[in-house]
Length: 585
Image 1 (cartoon, one colour):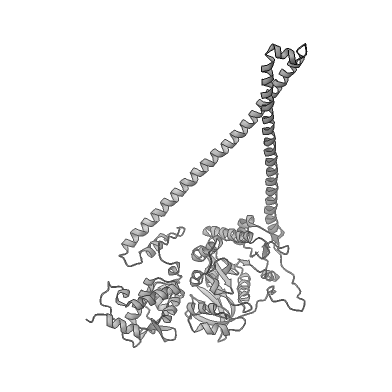
Image 2 (cartoon, one colour):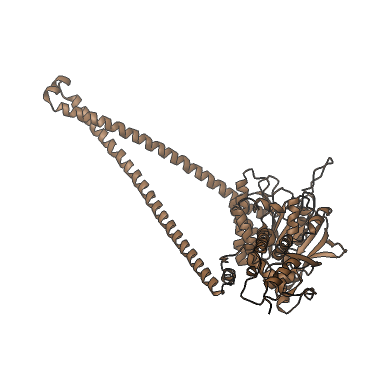
């Protein structure tokens, strides 16, 4: 990656004081972003502005368009518009997924994946899942900065319902894509409907106007309670921007209007002329068309084989009927032959000369030959059925073997996690350390043998370096008297009363952080006095977003109180309780 890419920034608007808002390209391309706002507040315009700036700088991306409103970008930029509608450059299905990822990553062609025109939602879901999977697989090798933009992300990773295979893959990209160069920007008008894990692990967030109570509560938990009311007063295009790569946690920003055609604007009475759109090369579309034609040929061949199989099954039924009839005739012929061996019967039933007897024997011989032929055909069919059943048994045995190996691997992971938990000295963080150690190699599978996924939040290298270099918090020297906890081996929860422990548990449940993290934060405040959230995040080794969410919940439960701007301290009642519970020296 060039130094120019590392340092390059894109300008997307201006802050409240008139300064330009610039976003670092590498953080946008490889980071975890979340943009939200009610309909008409400007969230899709913001996504289009970011896309315009990246395209202008020569960086490709892939946009998952759920409403067919991003094709206006083709007014200025050559992009491949793929989907189910005739207005798309090419109609595609899940079979095109690998080629789509190749076009985007290896041929540097920006893609609009328009899933709005598919009548069958399962087909659209499978298409997105397979394209995202191919991007993740290819990026393991290419490691090229690339951004996946997903509109209406709550449809794939809902907070209240079950997360399907596609949603789990998007969560996997948000957690592990960064180290391979694959970033994600999730967009939704209802943050309360988006899985909390996805939002708290984002390292850049854009909050446009929200008015519904459940949505504004999310703002209060992620940023701070004071923003719950402020976010509902934002004008169109205004937003609170929260990033992990700047010293200022939250900035009020006015995003610029996008330059390209606004295909998502609400229709009015006046006629809107569709602009002339740029097209990609015919050769590129031709490659995708060949895949479609090959799929059509395969479907035709499958239909032919199914028809042929149906004919053969009908023929087998006919032969079985004929065989049954032949057996009946053969039985009657044998009875007649037995009767003819009796001279008196022959003389009483057949005319002189014996011609009918010879004819009857000939018919019996012909029927027996036909019977043998039918039996041979049925024997061939039985052999084929037997061979297929043998194949099925082999595959079943292979499946059982693979399941056994999988269970053995799981047992190994459990044993290693247990050993590391024991080696950690019982401080409650062994499972987290096990997950961290197993992720040491760049290509290794990350094993999180315990703890909530939120606890593995993002924290930038600059934040870690500032903390480790001995930097102190500017507000940590307040006048509050510290609380000395004499016994280092006693957990903070053992000193506190049951009611306070319950409040810590409720705060953790609301923020999805662990009780150990909450107790570590309370102990930190007890030892040092007032602190800012970024300092707390560095001391407990958690992301700023996750810590801010927990701090907000602790304030709600009366454990913490605001000591100054963006600064918090233990509530006086809690401090008094700690003093009374701590033995004097």
